[in-house]
Image 1: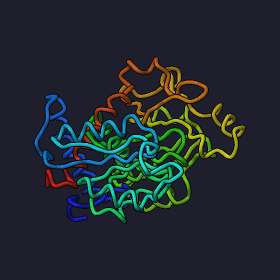
Image 2 (image 1 turned 90 degrees about the vertical axis):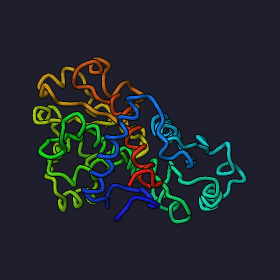
Image 3 (image 1 turned 180 degrees about the horizontal axis):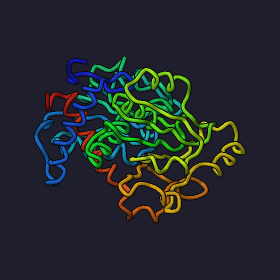
Image 4 (image 1 turned 120 degrees about the vertical axis):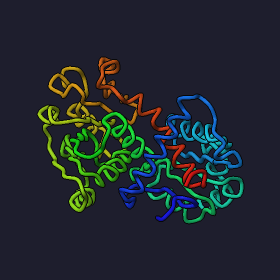
Amino acid sequence: MNSFKGNDIISTELMTKQEIEKILDVAASMNEILKMKTKAKLLEDKILAVMFFQTSTRTRLSFESAMLRLGGSVLGFADAKVSRAAGPRAETLEDTVRTVDKYCDAIVIRHPESGAARKAADYSRVPVLNGGDGQNQHPSQGLLDALTIWSEKGTLDGLTVGIVGDMKETRGMHSLMHCLAKFNLKLLLAGPKEISPEPAMIRFLEDSACSYEVTEDVEGSIPAMDVLYTTRLNKEGADSDEAYMELLHRYPRIDLNLLKNAKKDCIVMHDLPRTDELGLQILPEVDDTPHGKYFDEVEYGVAVRMAMLALVLGGVE
């Protein structure tokens, strides 16, 4: 796209390196607004609609915070059950979008079905931003993770980024890998083979600027990593409860013992929440070490979403 203004942001897959860098540059400037704990007037005449068909803490609240920090307003629903978008007399997604776009200047949608954000964009008269659709994409998550790495390490090029865990079913990881693949870095994809990347992702990486390696040896891979990015195991993608529990026992958990051979400046990231039925994905003992950056990601998330909104709504060029 020549300009973000008026356009949707549904996926990071087709974004160019220049477009990603543009969002990150604008997000860096938005950090200054956040540091001052004030509001800008970039979008003071704009309204954002949030349509969340799935539960959310960080994505919904950070989009709302981002819009408010830019001087705009927010309306919408955090649970489709309080609207005509769900229930025994629910209208179609298409009709819901055709209604909501009359009330606002942009829409953020989260939906359990892969492809729902693209469908919403096809029917909306205003820009649509994907807040996560099924196991498909979560572009703002991928972009905020890229911003975290860039801000904490000073670059995206030349790094070894370890992606540890569920690369098959996790939409945020898909979006992050699509972002990072545009840069001259190495992706170290570590975890059980059952949750290694799908063939389509491997083909994408093979045609990209980055290099990559797939391994099941998480512990042996730690010393090479400049960044260790992990996420929870998605139960939705398991063949059965038994298969999920068996895999969970082999799923890599991040603790000080695992990190004892890590580089001193290796940063540990997670899209949060970090819990599952058997406990924490990252143990609290990592939280206050120089490695732990997952709560910093939350703040970077507001800056990225401010940048996305400002760009698609013309607040910045």
